[in-house]
Image (cartoon, rainbow, N blue to C red; front, side, top):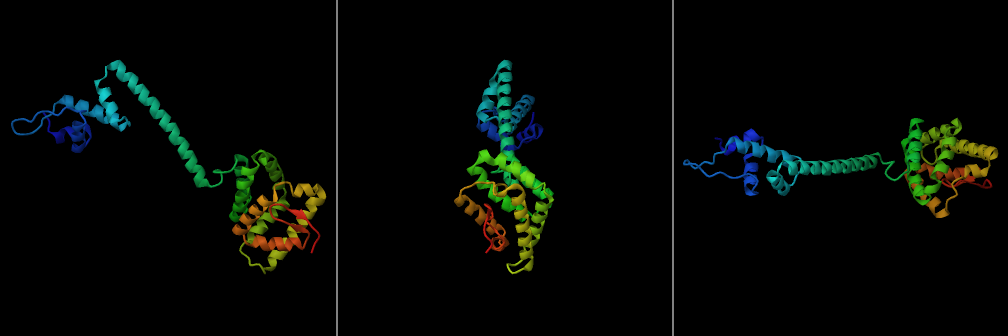
Length: 257
């Protein structure tokens, strides 16, 4: 015969858990012996282990009581039902983990997969992470506003970043982000970008340069996001306007001022 402490040790639970199961009516509480102690037999160990196993599997204690009283067929059916519920919970937890992973990654939380892939390609090319963030923050409202056009725009973007000249511009722009507005390198960068845009417009047409076709209020919003993330971009736009181009999100050809 076992004391309550010995019973708990054999079953791998605490004395407090045994008393809790007594209170819930799951485990019969024996009468005290002549010395005032409650003594438990081997059957109590087996019953307590069954209770512990079911409880650790997430079975509510009210359901544990039903299972302990069920016959073999009812018990098997109930276990199958519990297994089905647990598998559903596992699937839901996996979905939660996927959402948390997307939240941690930042990009895929609110962006289509093809845009995430494009941003990943920019990183592979060595583009400064601040420029990638500008791109990402701009694509979030753009994809939300016109999701049906994202595949078309992404096809154009993939084509554009296959041009080493544009990649070179991105890399040079990354070097310019830490420069002040009066840094002469910004002027050189404006010259390079204006030359690239002009050449591309002459070769492919102005529509190729400005292919987003988005509403002016949305374009201004995206410009603001870019300027907040990369302040030198605002000064760069001012320099570009003197070289025949204006706009950040929505590029337009203008007469040089």
